[in-house]
Length: 254
Image 1 (cartoon, rainbow, N blue to C red):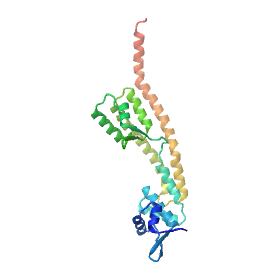
Image 2: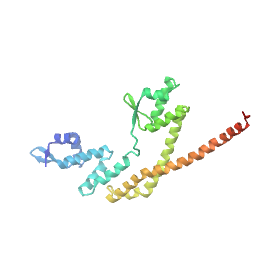
Image 3: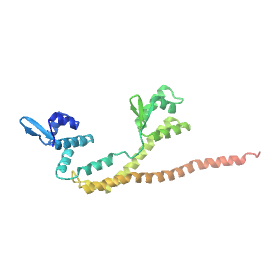
Image 4: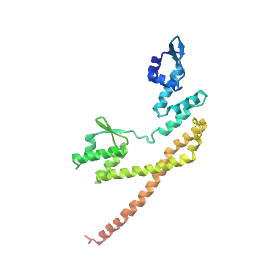
């Protein structure tokens, strides 16, 4: 097994000497083997240091990391816990983010707006999360949403009204997501309670449920929104269509 001085260990793990000493003070990393006054670390230290870095990068606290490392030492599969964390944090859409320049956005959405209005609309669009400043360009998390907005504006709907409805729909979707999460939290997540590092089977079961929720949510929302749109459109336009038909009947022939 290879052995490393502390500075070499830090370099290989993508960490710092200061961090390594801090992890040792917190009992997260075993002490090195001493050869005279030189501390020598091996591949087990390197593996643990990389795992600590990964857990910190995912937002785990030192207390939770200590529990996970203790579980690892006793033979439990920390990968199960990390697998659940990945399921919980993976994006729920396969849509690939895009980019747009300021000029492109103004060309699509800024027709008829003066400079102050364009600046205000840009701030609103960023606040809603439809675009994100990224250097000289803008990152577009959902090109589909931007395309929908462009189509609505092209149809003659004011951009302010488009952004209003985007905010409202975002809030509605947050309510729907909360209902699904509460349902699973009430009936599934309780299996993970009461133990810092849950049983691997329980973690795998919960991860599987969360994974299955992804297509299920879309399968539920799509038909409900389709039926609601049918009802709303018929109710909103039905009376107007009758008025138009009556007007056509009353027109003189020829």
